[in-house]
Image (cartoon, one colour):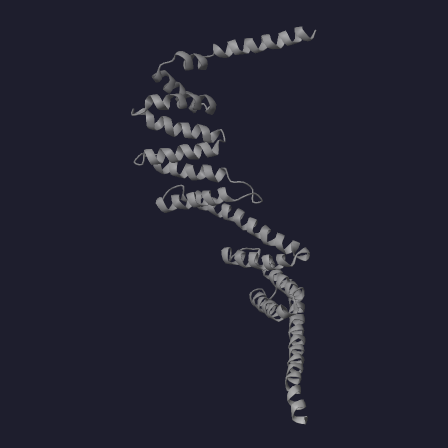
Length: 297
């Protein structure tokens, strides 16, 4: 029974292969002239049959080199790969096109499609953003090269979207340091550094209010968990961050929490100053004691 079942499957595969080998496309690939293949590729392209059109254009490109059809074959081939979501390949092909045919009427479109292909290949914000940086740069290069292009508006929107990914990635990184800082004092420092970097890179971000407060909290917590010799400096830094925070966000929901840390920081600085004064008196006392003993003798 199993052998008969296997035989039926094998027979079915053979029939499909034979039917496929007799299809118009297979005949065109096997025995069609270059002109027929080019015409066929254009017809498949018009029907949005990207796979078959792509196979024919790929086969024709080396043959058509130097002919009038060569330019369009390469241009359409790049689009067939784009429509099949082969974005890195289409980016490579579009780039090659506008570099090879710099004076073509399609060079501007090809340069945009190169950048757009890279844009389509960018990952979600939680993954590595190297491709996002590359796509952003390519889109900006396009706008710089063609400031009046009909694609400028789309390219600008895409840049803003990609910057949103980079912004979210940087926000999550800063937040991660902040969340793990309770387990590792070094993470407090990293959280402050990451937030400072975020504020510089994304000054208009909607996350800045929250992160400005978290920077106060991280620096305050760092001061509390530091060696006494470093506490005063870090409490002063927390006060500085608090003042910057309330100046910029006076109506923030985090203001009361920040003010409590501000008040505690001031009290701790006063306490540390008193301790330092008492120690200074003790040092002076011990410093002068030998002189008194010598005078008595």
